[in-house]
Image 1 (cartoon, rainbow, N blue to C red):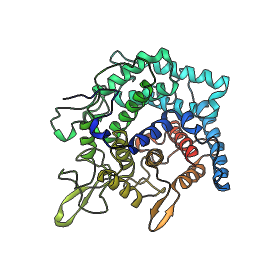
Image 2: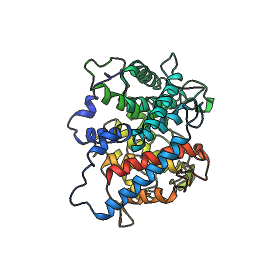
Image 3: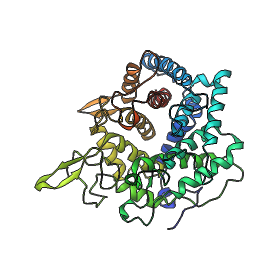
Image 4: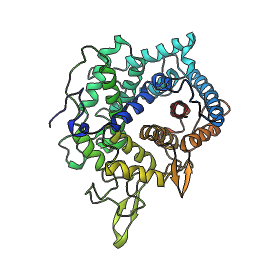
Length: 407
């Protein structure tokens, strides 16, 4: 398999393209380097409405209260929630670092303790994990270390990056899975030992963040790069779009067109029966945002039919009541991906049923209303660990911090 240089953008995606790079920088900076992204919004424009300023004040209050609650959940070891999943600590640290709470001496000490815990999870193969889900944990821990940006962590950061690149699938028994990335080889159920769209998206985010950081170095490290063409092919095979995806499960119904499934041949949203008894897979909200983000990280042009179709499905299925196709399952993760993808795409309003929706305002208000009086958030549906208050609060804080910068 041909590998591309780690610090160059594939020429096929670069030629004549300007907007995707802006998408990429906006998305990565907003999630990983929030303080940089928010500087652009430090001085509200003159035309800003009083309503936006009022909502931003409410978001600040919710973020401060949530960050305080989250910080109090830290264990003596420095970890947040399950120590066997350091990704939960990584997400919590990123959320706290992006809040004003990080400026206090007490919290800075807690942050250092948290990063010491993450360092203790680094393995000889370059991954950062405890028992399993090694790729998922490594990707999120890498994002945390990139947010911290400490020179003494350079070798650990490089090792994590190289670990992620090595997880890209090739020569799979099912060739439609080639190019993607899964949970990782360590301590994973045989049912999970294959690529999926969610792990691919998380890995791409971490790898692109690494590239942005490395461009600031005088002598950037060199190592084999990701095969971005293979990534794009895999992501395309996860999209319900007959125009570009020949897989036999692709839905022909306009209701599914443009959305995404978990991996080629399987959707957590289940199946639908089409004309003639044909079985097709249903698209889901969270995976459709993951697919759009993956294309953005791969620098696919905005005018590409896959991008256009993805945005079309997401606009047609916009809701804050549920994760489309999955009900309340993964609801807060859905909110999190929604904010990242729509901010990156430059979408300010969504036309749903002929009515313009200011999605960022609506999502901000929704999260404010869902916050518990104690400061945390939690889903009453436990799928994908969303009964874990630490995880859901971290998702919510990261989402609010992103929304605050976009209002």
